[in-house]
Amino acid sequence: MKAAVEHVRQEYAFSERRACRLMMLAVTTYRYRSVRSDEPLRTTLVELAREKPRFGYRRLHVLLRRSGERVNHKRVHRVYREAGLAIRRKKRKHCIRQGQPLLVRTSANQEWALDFAHDAVAYGRTIRVLSVLDAYTRECLALEVDTSFASRRVTRVLEGIVAERGLPQTIRCDNGPELTSRHFLAWCVERQVELLHIQPGKPTQNAHVESFHGRLREECLNLSWFQNLFEARRRIAAWRKEYNEQRPHSSLGYQTPQEFAAAQSAGLDMAERGARNSTPSLAPRAPPSRLKPEMELKKVVVFLRERKQGAGHNNQYLRSSGACQ
Image (cartoon, rainbow, N blue to C red; front, side):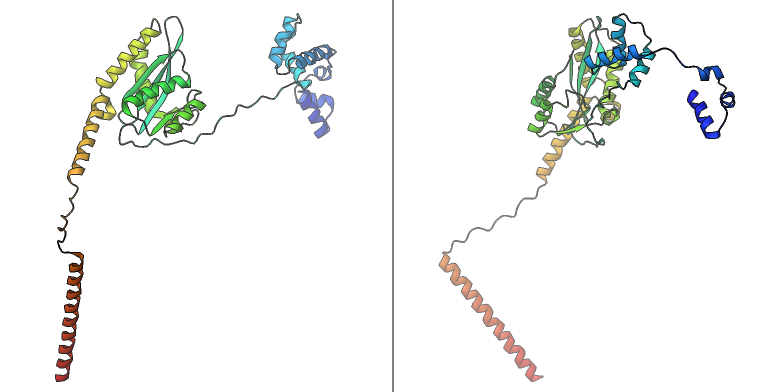
């Protein structure tokens, strides 16, 4: 407010009283000058900041209180800023991802979707659920439950699925540390699996597994009270079996994922068998000649000679007919 009064006085040449009346500020308040010195606090803050150069004013205020000095945190912040002790915050570097649209898949193992769901057991311990979903058949390929997951644990789960179904063409996942580690990236490169990372903060780019997690939470996690980790594994594994074998899926024409996958597999087998049966057979080859090579050559020479003589006879006939006309 004092700065506003000073600006009005300099800009419009107002008197002190008129500027204070215009800004609705008491003249005594404008004239007041603090006699309190912040030099001892400034000196103490500078000494603490030299000892702890990465501490902000809040931590320095805690250290002042521990030393027995009673001072308001707002005053500490003001003196801290005036002394030029504010540190620059390091902006966290995020990898830039380009959004990849959801493509229409036409067969199994074209794309797998990976993500993690979170829950807790009765005594408060947090658990994580690794979900692996086939984007075409909607089959839940794995629901691994544990308190934490390293990248090597994730690749072990994927190796188990690959042993049963084969390698996928693409894996779609988020930017978690388990899915961006060097080990996981090397695993994908070694097996020639394309890795699609979604953009940070846009889970809808991995919509298949997000929709699956909605069903998992509504039908299993919110309805269950897990006493411990082992009970959580048992119940979630039973729900996965029910999801794949019994639960009708609306996007699959109310078939179960297992029924849909079996029907698609049978349809592909029939198509391949029909393609093999409809392939035209090659024409039978002529039987090889029983003549000797020199006899074959003599036969060809005689044929060419007769052809030449016939052509000469025709030319002579045409010449004679033209003379008669």
